[in-house]
Length: 293
Ligand SMILES: Nc1ncnc2c1ncn2[C@@H]1O[C@H](COP(=O)(O)OP(=O)(O)OP(=O)(O)O)[C@@H](O)[C@H]1O
Ligand SMILES: [Mg+2]
Image (spheres, rainbow, N blue to C red):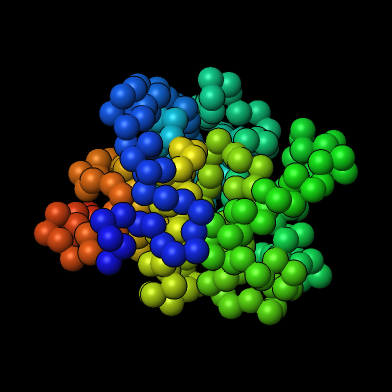
């Protein structure tokens, strides 16, 4: 479908970019991946004193540049996990370590995108994408002086997700899929080392969602940031992630850690292959067990 790679017309990325990433992986990138970038050590979370636990003892190690997905029933603590890793909430017990430092407050190396694109309606697409540059240090101190350079970066990023020509439109002039692409650009504009995605494609139709899988895979293969993707869509987890974690019902804990054997880059044809459908079946049976437990 994509001539052996996920290159799509109109994007800035080329197949050689993928080769670069693959070479890197084989020639030493894996060493970086095996290094632990995010660590949860015996983490438990209780929202208030006297409440039941939201997260039961959780241990996780995520390598630098690794793409992981977390799946599990509603209310099991997936979004809570993201709040802990991004520093929006401290654990009740245990430690969260990111890049060798214990997380003690909101991290600035994080980009986030949610189910609802949450673009500001009074800002153009370009200005929405530039928003983190007004907030995150050191960019906010440089924005006035380097405005042209930052705008150029935002335009390139928008073009890479197929939004060239839409920079000056307001969010209400964009389709849901276009808004979600802009939201992805906003989460990546400050080149975060860690990207947190909470059901980012959940509100989109199946075709748009699958198109965005490719867009995200493209972005990630060119610049290897670490990704934690929360999703209810098992096909999405199988398409995008290197490792898939299945969580139990509340109080959530990790029940299964499954490496994804599918080679990259993955394309839509891969979703019809036996290894892909086997993986999705396996995940589905884990989720069934969790729901029946
Ligand atoms: N701010 C809060 N105060 C108190 N309890 C909360 C708060 N946020 C979440 N919870 C509770 O913690 C548990 C885990 O919530 P969380 O939002 O992490 O679940 P989730 O797995 O993301 O669910 P969903 O798939 O529906 O988004 C839920 O039982 C929820 O009610
Ligand atoms: Mg949630």
